[in-house]
Length: 282
Image (tube, rainbow, N blue to C red; front, side):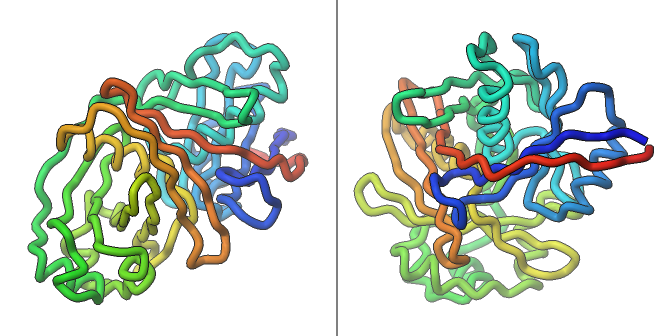
């Protein structure tokens, strides 16, 4: 029987009842991927992260949803940085290791913003959706759809679509049959990130399919990174956006996106909520 130490963080917020909850496990000894997946499924949060080599200059993160491992995700990495900072008062690491590779990180101690750089140069490809098909899938009018959805990858490939207003983003009513047909990356991974912008403010929602039902994530850093990738591929060299997500769920998340000479960075604040121990027998 192992005693596993974990911490609870609300990511992308400074408030206790907002943001995206995250369990962070700090491993003193190795834990199998099978055990990690079972723990993530039991806790049933959008993601759970496990940190190895916490005292080193090369911390390793393993990220799991309740259904699968992820190579990269912004919410668990940004949340893990809060714990790494707590356990290393004068941290010397400049990156963390993930399945997608080394992810550069920065901590702004003045503004208390934890930054991560997208691990991959952005790529994009067309989806199978037309404007009319997108409107039908999202339960909107064709006028609400500014462009056909596009698959974008800066570390975790996702489907993105820009809408004409925050009201349209809030009005989405997904057709699950069309959603599974057109927004599935592979079996068990169906998603879309819908966003609208007003000047430097973005309003977004992220939907996914889980066990045949539509779910929503309150704060999705990897999707924000993909938004930066999409804008870079469309010619943007530098920008700063403030992204609001999770509002319709009653858990507002604030994410920061900046593109600096083509480099894509995602940032957010964190709120420490508590810690505990989990007994686990492999």
